[in-house]
Image 1 (tube, rainbow, N blue to C red):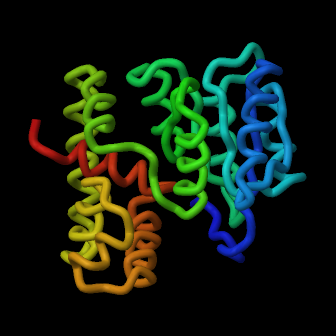
Image 2: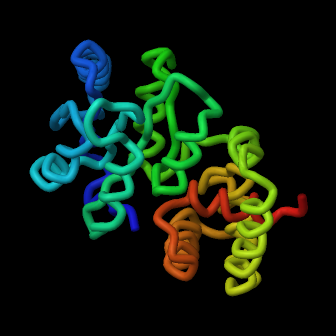
Length: 228
């Protein structure tokens, strides 16, 4: 399960992971310009991520997918395998918006992805959203990624996803479906006549019941469960 920020008014702590020194420097310079973001470190290999997370306790990790050492997928998976109260959100960085590696990273527990050519303001906004617990993956992109599944795997995932949703209460399913539609907490709260805090509580319970790490994985489950 992803971490809960103890103080939401504090700057969002960011760790950068990329094997290209120029990319690391560029991202650091870009994000340092935002007063509500704080760069706590930058490493060049996925194998360094666990140690850097333990040392710097970031809220968000910007993770390159393709690295000469340990890749971003395996680094994300290892973070989730050792998940605790301080597991950060992971945003993968890629050059392709429908790459199979992106899909695998989302399945491994990433909270979304960014193209490396995203404008600076877009990257800053994405880090803010993820740091606040919101996904940065639209339903259309989710469907695009799911379309890359082979039919047999898609059928199996659909069965598994429907079983997950069947274990939820009616109200929990309403919240889950709203998450699957890409709606932020404030919109869900308004439509379902709840407080934002109540919505967050429902999402936390749903993730626990479903054995999921974050709301992007929940959105994938919702889309998996839809008729083909």
